[in-house]
Structure formats: structure tokens, C-alpha cells
Image (tube, rainbow, N blue to C red; front, top):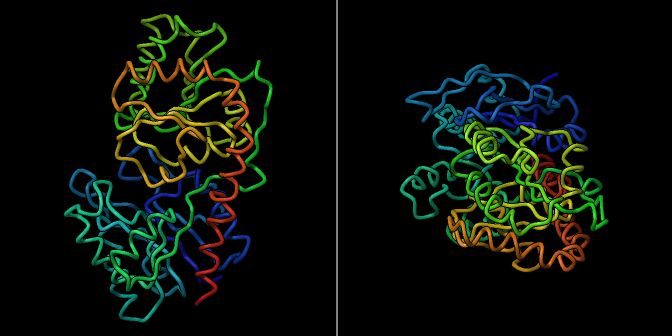
Length: 359
């Protein structure tokens, strides 16, 4: 069957599986996701079991700085509506945008409103040109939409809240204080995420923590061997758990059900809404160059901040969390409900469905 609605991505990681499933339920075989197998960062890979996935080839250039994709040209040029990454480093996207503009076909650009270095970044000049070639834009948060509309009022901007779970999956699975003791980190184990800072702070806090408290790292990446070596050197095997990458919902829900707090020692990402969905508040680095999901954070309601890169501050905040355990336990249901209303797959997917239907 001819593909009328295509989302073209560098990769289709497992955390997007529910979004693509939700859209495919609406459009059936007319919808497909075209992606390569590996991202610019090699730790991010495609889940080939994703509903509607069609494999194409990624050709990285200049030490993985730029990308050309092949194996999709005919379909992405001819389809009725195309959603593609708002990433100027993907050379093939420029070609596709220009050709579809000439053919008067609807193209939607999806991504962050600004580069990681902000709206004043030199590279945003290229993004601005790219935005002008698209028919409309999808960004990840309401605040990003407002910023982009203020900067470029002529653009048609929508937002699809960056989400991982359906509303009915965002639940507080455990309310027994005796079973809720751990700290949890979920995400890639990379230098920018600073997992070792968290490990060191937890180690320093241990003498003042109860014996049943553990630190759980869920994720993989180049920092993992260093973390494992630290754990072994300091005999922390009974206190620190490194699970590797986990995408299974039930397994993640189990880990979150025993976590009093999650921690983001580096820049905040999509895991913040994951944590809030399970009713687990987050300890956040204060002055990091965070992803847009930081808008979900409300100080003293669903999160606390520590001084960025300050080991002592992080240690003291960890101790303070346990001193106020009862207060944070009482907030779990409200934290989950807040997230459920704003950051569900239902809300995210409906933005795409609405734009596809506006053809």
C-alpha cells in the first residue's frame, strides 16, 4: 500500500514506539516511519520492531558531523504529508525540503525550536532557513512554541509534548513507605549526563543514610565501565545497581515503584516526564543547559535543585530528601496526575494526527 503519511528520522529508538503505534492505529498501512539504524551518537539506535518501521541507510560524513540518508527518496518525495527532523546537519533533508516545496507538497519539521546552545547560536541561522521552507513546525513543549512564535510570527507552530507513556500507564504503583527507599537515574551514561557525579555524591552520603537505601542506574553508555570500576574499588556492590538499558515498561515501573527520588546530575531530558508519570520527584542540576522538558519542573512541588557540578551540594540534597521523606511521599499522586494531564502519548500523538488530517 502507498505510504501517504511518513515520519522520516535519523533513528527510531524504542522510547518512540508508543507514539508511532498510536499514530499507526489511526492511519493503518498508510503510515510509516523511515529511519536508519544508528544516530550521530552511536549509543542511540533504532528498535526495528517499532510499528510501521521502514529501514533506510544512514551515511555519516566528517566524523559523524553530517548525514545523508538514502533508500527513501521516491516515497518521501511523493507522500501526501512528510514529517522530518528539524536538523540542518542532515543534508538529504535539505534536498527533500526544496523538492517538496517546488512540488507544493506539505512538509512538517519536527524538533527542538533552538540548537542546544540557544536561540542566539550561530547555527540557528541555518535552522531559520530550514524553518522557512517547512509548511509547519512541531516543537516539544508549549514554552518552545511560544518562544518561536514570538521570534518568527509568520510560522505555523504546534507543540507535541515529549512523552513516553499513555495516560493509563502513568500511575503510582506503590505507596508503602517501607518499600520506597532508593534513588534512581534513568538515561544514557555519558559525560554530559554526569552519572559519576551522582555516584560520588551518593558514596559520600552513605554513612548518613539507612542501610536499605540503594542507588540504581538504568541505562548504558561510555561511562558505564568507569562507574563499574568505581563501585568495585569502593566495595559498593550491595549499594549501587547498574542494570544496563531497559525499555520494558513493567520492569521500569517496578524500579520506579521503589524509588523515593530520581536524579538528573547533568542536563535534564525526557526521563523527567517518565519519573513524574510514576509519581517520583526529581533532584535536578540547577544551572545546566537543560532540554525543553525542564518546563515540567516545579521547585518544591515535583523537584528540588542542587548547585551544578557541586558534589557537596548534591550530597546534602540527597540527605535532605530522606529527612523529608514523609512530605515527598504525600506528593506522589499529585505529581503523577500533573504529568498525566500534560505529558502523555495521547497528547503527543494527537498533534500529529490533527496535522495529518488538515491536509
